[in-house]
Each structure stands twice: as C-alpha cells, then as structure tokens.
Amino acid sequence: MNAPPSFEPDLTPAEYADHVLRDAGRFAAVLDTADLGVDVPSCPGWTLSRLTEHTGQIHRWATFCVSEGRSPTADEAAALETYDPAAAAAWFRAGAAALAELLRHVDLRSPAWHPWPTEQVAGFWPRRQAHETAVHRWDAQHAVGTETPLDPVLASDGIDEYFSAMIPRVVTKPGRELPAGSLHVHCTDVDGEWLVWSDRDGYHVVREHQKGDAALRGPAGQLLLRLMGRGDGDDLSPLGDEGVLAGWLAVQGN
Image (cartoon, rainbow, N blue to C red; front, side):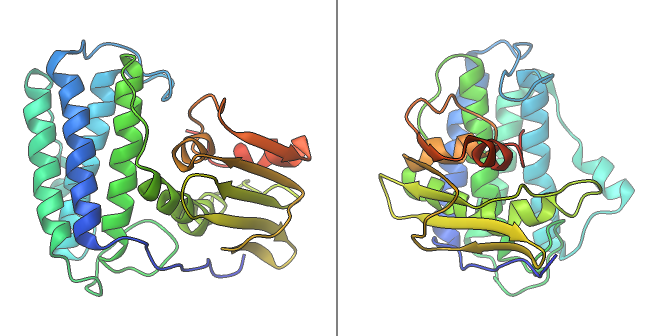
C-alpha cells in the first residue's frame, strides 16, 4: 500500500483538549448514576464498566506515550491499570483531566509513540484522543438511552482522521482488503467532503467534491458514527452502488 495521506488537523491542541474534557465530563456523568453492569450495544460484549476501563486506560496510556515519548514497558503498562469500579467516575475524570492538561501544551513535533502508520510525533495524540473520547462518550450515553449528538466540527475532523489514519491502520492487518469501488462522503451541516478508493496502486483519499460509485450524505456526527459501525443512519442519504457502500461501511466496524 502507498504511504498513507497526511492531512493537517482542523483544530488546535487546546481545542482538542477542551473536547476531551467536555466529552469525558459527559461520560463521567453517566457513571455517576448508571449501573456499570449494563450492556453497551455499540460495543458488543462490553458492559459500561468495561467501556469505562478501556477509555480511562487509553487516556492514561496516551498520557504516558506523550510525556515519555515512547510506549510503556510491560511493567509500566501494568502500573497504568488502576481501574477501580467502586470509584469509576472519579477515576475516569482524573485520567481525562491529566491527559487534557498535557495535550493543551504539547510540543507537536516532539517524539511520541503510537500504533498508527503515520509520523511518530506528539501532534498525533490531541486529535486521536478527542475523537476516542467523543465516540466512547456516545457509547456510554447510548447504553443508558441518553445519547447526545457529536459536535459537528469535531465530527467532520473525525471523518478526516478516519480516512487518513484509521483505514490505513486497518488494512495493514493480515487478510484485510479494501472494497472495490469509490465512496464519496459529504457533510451537510459543516464543511467536509472526501472521496476514497483503492486500486492496484494502493489506497487513496482526497478532500474534495468528486462523484463516487457510492455516496453517503448527512450530518457530520451521524456520518462519523456510521463509519465507526455505530448509529442507525436514519438521517443519512445513501446513493449509488449499495454493494460498494456496504463494503466501505464494513471496513472499520466497532
């Protein structure tokens, strides 16, 4: 596959940090009153407790990778696994607050490990953690029937990250191939259009209006959730080849 495209994030580190705090606060508000044993339909097989542990540990893991400039050793990773279900909300808020404060003042060009096929610099993390937190906040709220929309501007940026970083990572896994045909995705509430396709030369994505074999139009938040295997897509407008659309929507899943 060709080297993945690299688009500049649309928000500043401080803006991403603000989103981390806001969405983490909404996630933690669910934990204040919800049964941690409730199932999370958008993450099959997970309970709210498992979702909390996963997201909170990702916050701590990202904090380590940015502050130390490398991935943790096995012992260091084990030390990050401090989750206590009896204090879930406070634990979650503390990890998100520490992460957001670090991301707010991050040196974008400093070395920082991450498992995606793009440059190993700290500037990758503010964007990634804002979207990680936003989508899992929706998961937590959805589990108890209180979901609220994703921020449209952040969601449009999340679609951009999905096409420029998430898909290239998925297709590096053994046995994973991209579907034939091209897909055009178009946000109807904020700026954002993409055309993606794959051919013998690899995976391609451009940020512009072009006709694809299939298209998906709608609010940015719903588009991002649908690309991530979530949401019912009721407010989206699919067009063109149904097989091509289904193929691209199945790339990431949960």
